[in-house]
Length: 285
Image (cartoon, rainbow, N blue to C red):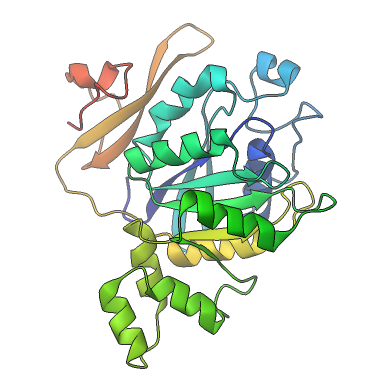
């Protein structure tokens, strides 16, 4: 991948609003002209006829958008438990992931299962609490449960992503000993510090909003642009396969993330590991 490319995944339990958030992100980033809806059967990422019929995501999909000088490759994944394997194959190629929590259900057992997978694959994670537009949703109550169930490294970010309160600065600083010492000495915490903590999985930003009503989306995109940083890769060619599919002519297609070097058009690869279906068996070449 290029030096400014970021592989970004979206995961959630079924009906948490994952595809709706994907549509909102693509729309506000200028990647699509009109938002589709799952219940209308016109979501841009649910293109398979069975997906549109059932109103759920079955296969992982890819989309592209830009924020500033960064190029994002968005991977939308299935949320239904029957298609967990399809989702898990994507996790080990991600630079960052968005975990969606449905506000009415808060931190459900399924959310905790997804959280453990993200820990297993060591994926830096942003949390978006969706459906806050529904009646009776309490930001404070939900956030308290997030910290209880997922840990104190989860920190609620403000609507203005640069205007942190003193309490929020402290919640960020305590996750890194060196940063905490500097902060207690009166030094400020910079954007680079926050980005580093997120990348090292020492900090998990939490945002609240409604994908359907487009509430909190602009704030979320601003935070993604500020705090998501591309990985550095070697010049030697390497790749990881995350999906095998077939086109309309039944030609086998291998989807991969390039982790180093480049791949020229029509170049033949003689790496058996690239065609492995199991995520556990795949190796970086």
